[in-house]
Image (cartoon, rainbow, N blue to C red; front, top):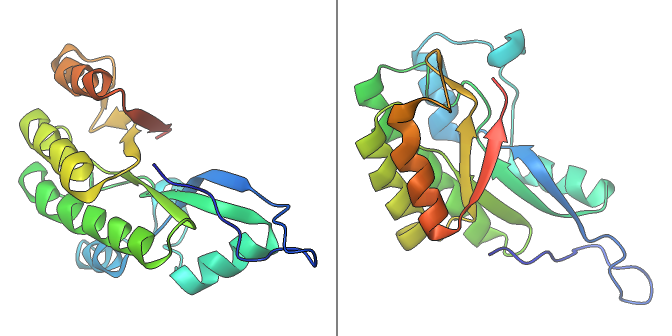
Length: 173
């Protein structure tokens, strides 16, 4: 689990910040490239795809006295792709997220994405995200291709999250 640190201690060497931003999005290059290939110029809500960099995120975090940002993909996640193409992009995004965490210890935590609505692929990615990458939790969109999280076929996802006592971040969509 992520441990908050502060890169901007006060004059006495103490860190007065300690804030954790649990709703921070990142846009790794592989994701932006996929959006571009799909012809998407906006993300959910019609907002233009923003530029993003770790350096800019850290600058904002320091200015706002945010010790740690829990990063995740925002909507549309990978839901703009055909279902069979989602697992590959999710794996690349999750790896990029953990690379960011590893490159900035304590400054970022990571909620992994899952390639829903493919439950089997999502369970496999969940195992990889927790057991191999060491993700802090997972993010789920509240609506996946018109299906809400209460759908009976998604029960195995929640059963596995419960078994792992995992953190689940729900993102409205």
